[in-house]
Image (tube, rainbow, N blue to C red; front, side, top):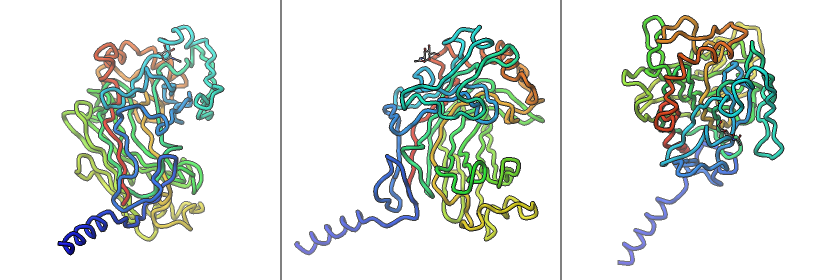
Amino acid sequence: MWASLLCVLALVMLSQACTPSVTTVSGTHAPVTVCSGAMIFADDFEEFDLEKWQHENTLAGGGNWEFQYYNNNRTNSFTHSGLLFIRPSLTSDQFGQAFLSSGLLNIEGGAPADRCTNPRWYGCERTGTPMNILNPIKSARIRTVNSFSFRYGRVEVRAKMPAGDWLWPAIWLLPAYNSYGTWPASGEIDLVESRGNRNMFQNGVHIGTQEAGSTLHFGPYSDLNGWERAHWLRRNSAGYDTDFHRYQLEWTPDFIKFSIDDVELGRVTPGNGGFWELGGFNDKNVENPWRYGSKMAPFDQKFYIIINLAVGGTNGFFPDGVTNPSPKPWWNGSPTASTDFWNGQAGWLPTWNLNVNDGQDASLQVDYVRVWAL
Ligand SMILES: *[C@@H]1O[C@H](CO)[C@@H](O)[C@H](O)[C@H]1NC(C)=O
């Protein structure tokens, strides 16, 4: 009897033993020890934990002249019934319509939590003009930049994409320390992006809510980015806005793999030439910033998680010349893009259904975020 008891005890201890993992972590909410296979970060959004999620506060437009003003405001980001909602609203609801074309918006705050988080691209202060109105949409972008970053692991995010013309939801990761230099030299991992248009076609292909994509960005400088060699799309005729799906990343020292609902979307397995060879940068006469990194460089350093809902922008994510029930109201080359977008409001605002069901259609909804060590 003692023997079997000891045996059970030994088994219990064995099952609790910590096998070291190749995964590394940092941040205020990172575990002290990382055991292989263990969950190392999770949020079920039973409450909105701003110790985990820092809000961006900026007019910067993501470097793409996107039309939103990211702020920390429970109109635009909140948890309810165990879900995170990121919901767009009109900037004019707060400041009035005239302010958009004449007001001075300075969003720098004095409290630590109110600081402007991105001064680039006139991100902390803008003056509206009739040609170039102030960011007409308010939304949110939250990130684990202080609470949790990790290198290698498995990620699963269960989420429902928003519906509404020109909405651009994204769940993605950026490097914590830019170990190889500024974007895109240190990489970017886009777990999922989609477009909120319910009936948008390009060359006969539905590129709105029926399409979801995953992408890696990597390259020595912004005009030399190998993303097209690490970009995958999946289509779903029901639309990614009608149900929750599980968006998954498997990131190891050998490969990066994206899946949706356990079905692989795509993967990269770099050879010894790493992402430099994969990007086809050999003949470009630039120095390889990753030459002393591993073959996974720049994806061999810690990244943090970002969840946001953007709108529009001029970088071509919403291509000119698409077919949409109400035509795209701005050209990507337009110097008055935000004004053009705002003037096209009669086309897009009704598609957001902001007055129905607390604006849930146009909200990016997240059930949970989970990260495991390898
Ligand atoms: C939050 O957003 C709402 C809606 O735009 C606005 O009315 C309110 O003034 C905002 N709160 C703060 C503190 O900025």
